[in-house]
Amino acid sequence: TNPKNRATCHLNGCVRLEYLQDLVEDKSELPSLPGADASPGEYFQFMSAVSRVTGKEDNLRVVLRRVLEDFEEDGVVYLELRSSPKQTDTMSKRQYVETILQC
Image (tube, rainbow, N blue to C red; front, side, top):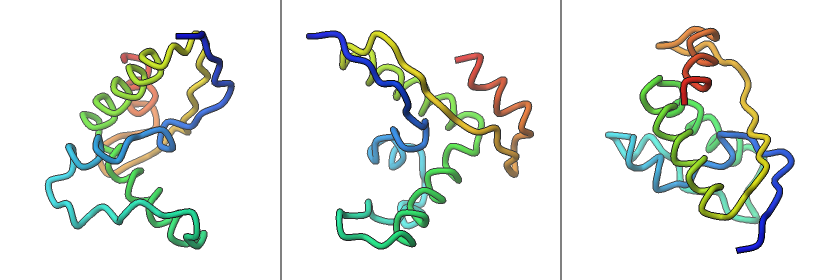
């Protein structure tokens, strides 16, 4: 495999749908993946659902590890993976950042 660079990726934008489905008990909580002709509102609805899933500490750990493994398997040698500190129902912004750093 040839080495690849991914200069800028956002964590929630790199999560495979199957990872989200593994973590959500009620599958109806996840809207379907928006298609190429989806409206901006449909994309925002989907990304809000992703944020709800990754807003739980255990889920964030699982998702981050899987996303990092995906990039490694793709032969990525440099990765800038971004995420914004988020206050959620179960984590403070500090806990969110610490969870990411622990992975």
